[in-house]
Image 1 (tube, rainbow, N blue to C red):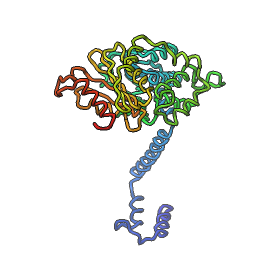
Image 2: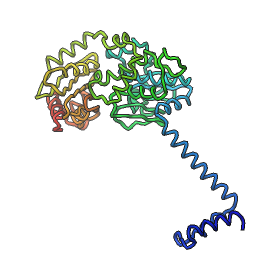
Image 3: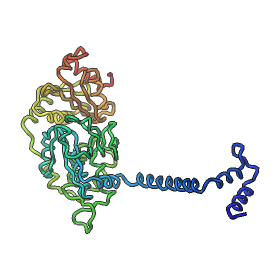
Image 4: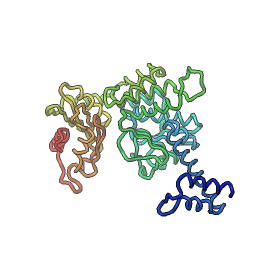
Length: 401
């Protein structure tokens, strides 16, 4: 009896030769296994080994921190496009800065692009003070590369052909179903997407310029941008924050440039913005603790959310919606500090039966757009006038729609 047969016999005797598995004895199973052709047996062993090794690598890959995984994915490309949402705000621009810094560290060229315009004085100051090189796009053919990284939104929009773009990476904190083909990190419980980027830098082991290291550098401009991105999306860490926002701010503190931060935070305000704010204050309609105001035709739609912010300072007011018109489109902006009012859902319900209208957002902040023509009745609806529309807004905030 050879060594193989002796081992098999000993095993069967130890286990009990009378044991059966579906009518087959253990001994029969063992004999069947050893009777396989050597080539088949070898292929079987190799297959099992490959499966184990592949599974180990998969587990090891997904156990890596997301910042490390993003870094390695970016390293696979010679160049990428970092795409912000239309009319990017400081959070979007800060995220784009962060991705570009990681890409540069792995010798990947990054082009920062956006659709729409940068109009809000805070957004213009952010771009100017931090000297950002940003490119506008009007169609998918304007994208600098095929490899697209989406930041602060998870579905491409705002330009012709946006629906055909398949991003390789998505980093966001807004609700939505958009995903990247290679990497998706959407954290809807976070107050700002910049917070996610800060965690990436921590995971990668970023250093400040004065530290003795050749690692990824967290420059004063980048640290300042990320901190202001967090501040702008959380109303200076007072609205919609998670613990992660405070941890991120603490991580950035030593690296920020206070002068740059002050210049971004206190830009000059244009006359039309002040006029819209004044209209919101004087023409508001208040019912209980809710306020609604039509500010009329506006030249700068970014003045509408600023007017909504202004109305939130009114004593006794817990939720507000401000709307105005530009180029045949009504723009809505809502704010809430009332636990009973999910502002994004309230706006969505208010416009739900108006064709081509869209609205949504977070519990504390929301926005939307609708065509004046569709609001007046073009298409399958009977239309609503502004008085009825305001009743809808009040009803939606009260949870009656």
